Length: 185
Image (cartoon, rainbow, N blue to C red; front, side):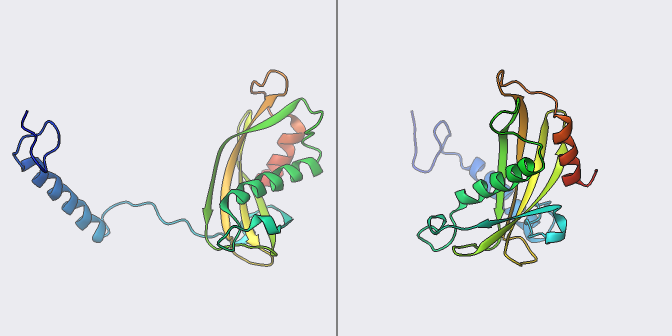
């Protein structure tokens, strides 16, 4: 079996495949360089006016990592805290005795500027989509008093029956609060 240096396994010493690959790469690079490729735009920070409700969150010493800023995993905790605290305060979620609970099935975050202890963070909340048993929350994290997000992200809750853990329609009180956060209500 003639394996030659520089050839992929199963390829012959014929280098035409490599020339074809290089030509394709060069063509793609030129298209990108000339702005002819549809690349996704780089995410941008958002203004606080984009959010419907806010919650202040106190950073803790332990939130900072060895680089002197809040570790990325903490941001997801803040998303959860901001949304669930709002729902509890509005009487739309009972985490101890309620028959309906939310499971996170998707989450994502984009970072624009560092946050660190001892800053106070302001979490802006809005709802981007309300389904029959699910909701997409969007959260913007701001340094206290800042106009633009230091980070923004989302998570999707699917609401389920506490006992069966099967999806259920959103309870009416929850739906009403979600509609306020979406601008519908």
